[in-house]
Length: 294
Length: 169
Image (spheres, each protein chain N blue to C red):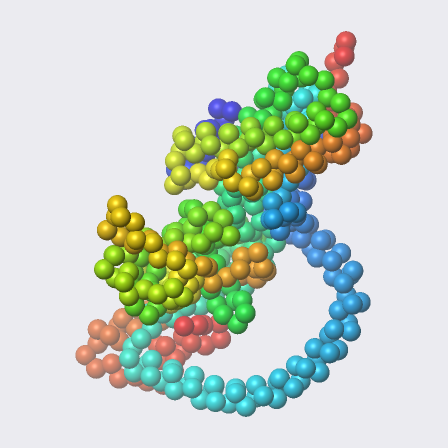
């Protein structure tokens, strides 16, 4: 019991975590094997029924592709125009790179903590404290951040964990606050430190995005939507309850993001320069290549 | 003794890995039964010399490595019920159904209380703990009670590896 307490004491103060890293690395490998076995068994059982569905889906998708071809042409034009305008503004602060796309291979063993284990680690360029997003229903949302990294696996601290904090703002009113999880995916997130004066402008359904004021999360990642506004009498701040943008029970794949430092530096230099004459393919344009996003 | 501790740690770890992978989405309302805890309770009940406590400690270390919890957290919350189960050895006899259910349920409650002890010592900034008023906690306790009888039955089949025999036993 004393040894356990000592370990908790050490690890919560981040003095040394070597034994954890050794066992965690080995456990990550075994978890990958178990996920692989489980996935293989599941795929084998359901593959026959899926074939018939796939034929129908294929026909429907062919029709869709035709309409998307038209949309794609106008989208490419808009993207090119967007890149040109960003160059002219020296606006590169929000450019981030997708460092790795990863599959969730395991979750926390118990019901108290809620970390996700993903199948990418140091070897894929993942590092501690990088932001993690996911795409659901055609929308991108903040999923959490990298908590621990091993060679081929990492642990993600999800948005709803009690230890998760992110600086956020309301997309419409630009009011800022600090968003914190409540430990359960079914419970709303809490946004604190919002002045009651500003709370009058906030409406249920408003979109909450990251502010980009901390060093971890890029700006404008969708956190969720306002679910409820509470105005406690004892405080000068309002408490905003937020419905997360992602349904965590359905998450399968995650994307690890990194702020693009080169683009950021180039943008700052351009802003400081006396004559920021844009050149083709510079700054934002070059950073917004494959794997880059705004 | 070392053989017993290592083999029971191995089985507990195997169940921990199953909990994190095949059962990652939970069985009922997203709640996963803690098979590893049930194994630890069984080992603690049937073995002397705190072998169950050692098993709880080592299995907890393995669990911590797979978890976002602080290192040592799971080892502590497994050690406490393991110690209590080892005390029960003198006080009660295990039957095939009712006592295993009770042991699985009570072990989960002890685990929950241990998590609250850690919360009090280290604070909510570092530690998440079970909320005793939360429905999910009692669901886990019920699930652990429900899986205990069949799991105990299976463990009895492997008792040569999991129980240290002594002269006079």
